[in-house]
Image 1 (cartoon, helix red, strand yellow):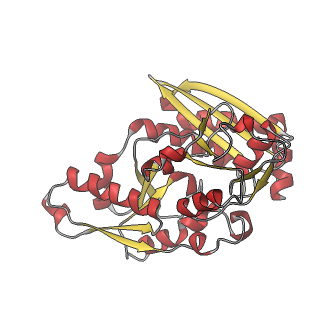
Image 2 (spheres, helix red, strand yellow):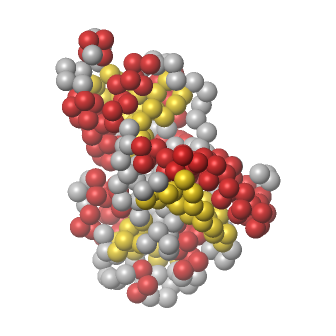
Image 3 (tube, rainbow, N blue to C red):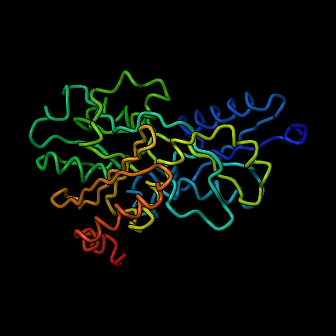
Length: 314
């Protein structure tokens, strides 16, 4: 493709080790798909990276990890942005689109502890670090006796805090640990039935300007159809719930043959109330399945719980 090699393809990325790994991985895949294409990284620090002393819910939510990257796209300082899809809000800004979703890595949450062989073996009152309302809700539902404490920072920082004894255990995404070569730190992988993953967890996504046909064309070979279908269902589910960053919401879709199964949850921060559900159907109806499950949970009472955490009825 002669035109594709005419100018470098610029990738906006966060500067954390994991974000740079993901951006370099996308760059490598692009070079394989388009020999001769020059791909360059445009690293930047987001507001989510800068503010580490408060929960994300207090400073604007997980969208803080992608906003600066989207500004770079809008101002033509970059052509594509690479994201962990669990950090991407369910509504994209006008003029932006997801142009490729990479094959999903292990979506499960990982339990890490230096002293306890499993989550169930934690002693009463154990201190567990997590920055996620979703994880907090599900962990507290399983073990109301544990104390969940805020844990922010990059993966290295979180592992260091565990090693320093500030927590009895921490819970992180398995995919990020594996990508960084840190899977040996995982003590136990939590089954999705016990801890439903975040919407998009384990999927690397590529965002571009909707009008940028060149970037859409160049990234198309990287798109994994199964990941695209699963995230379509999950994001439709989250969008219908209109949950805020304070709302513990989980959504995970699994595709086997042509059957897509979607699990979802809306919970309280304390874990004492949870609305769970599951739907299944043909993969081509992914978005409709997401809406169906969201409506099911809302009818069952999740609407009142969301109103409490957000102050606005969906």
